[in-house]
Length: 488
Image (cartoon, rainbow, N blue to C red; front, side, top):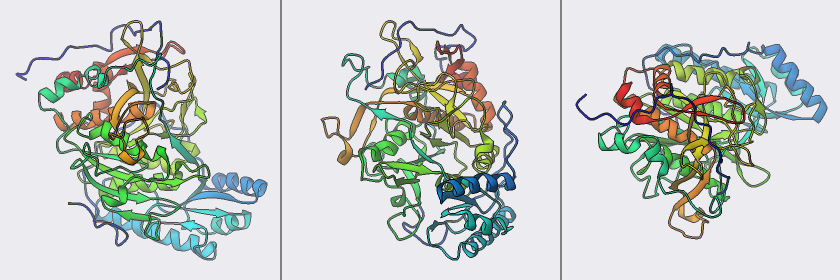
């Protein structure tokens, strides 16, 4: 390579334990409903996370678990699994078999539930939801075409905003780009060209000046509907952000951070999936079935196979170990994507836990990202910890990335920072860290297209800046994209 090497910051160096941690504050498918988009093909790539998954919970045990909940509470909202995750590349035979399996499962479920009342489903997709009682569960259990069942869990966004940090002194705008070596990658033409990043979130404002031309496709999967009388829609407009709460700006902020005009992978295309529904509190939340269907869409319908699927979401409960058995079907789709060369990048969560990460970050094949920031005393990166909203952290974290005071886009109508300019630089959380890593995967995959997820992750680990979380002694690398591209 003839270009000069960037500054090498080796993860073999001693981890930095900083004295003062910064405080928290601060050509698309037709729009709407209709036939499913054309499915795509891609070569499978081997990949596996170092930590082994927990043994999967069997069908009988899964039904037993939710039946106990239904008897205790009267009813329970469940995810009904209609088709298994593919075990090889999505060729015509695999696609046909799984589509038939999902259709048979849906018909069986509706038969058991005496019709569609209280259900949401997507034709051909692997999961649907329903609110059921114990009798309904017994009927579903008798249907062999219903593969399994799980409690439908709602997740929230793993990021927030306040206005000003550290006694009102805001970090320099775009500080994270230099710390990740992205100034070097941009200067040398490494921008993620030809890659795709799927952002599964509250939807993306594709009309925003920083995102126009960057959002190349979209979809909606929502248990309270996609504005067309159905629970799904396809096309760029289908992936548009919700508008009923300020937190509907979350997906736009995340998408721009990953691959917008000023994002990590500026030439990658964004596929925006609105997988949110309105919670009782009036904020966007994310249900298990909609997430599974978003991963199914990412596996089959996004071409080329995406470099990353970004999930900047998480539950309030933290897990010290891998949690695949909590929802094996969700874990299986993350594994399927990884086998195809797609990293499912998930935020570790913001519960200030030093012993666990949020669900679904605890899935064994996920790439888990914690929040690194700058210290007031030295200006060096450190894990954001020790206070409300701080990063979760334990041995399941794979990488750190900048996640505090990240400048990015927000829809102008939801811009509440005092200046309606469609930008906000006060957002923080692992939600902001995860898309930096999703963008990094796209940049590296464009530079080194033969790399598997494992190889890319290893490159980030080897060539990043080692940072130790002073709360628990866990040392991981903060992503340096320039070093990973140059040294591989």
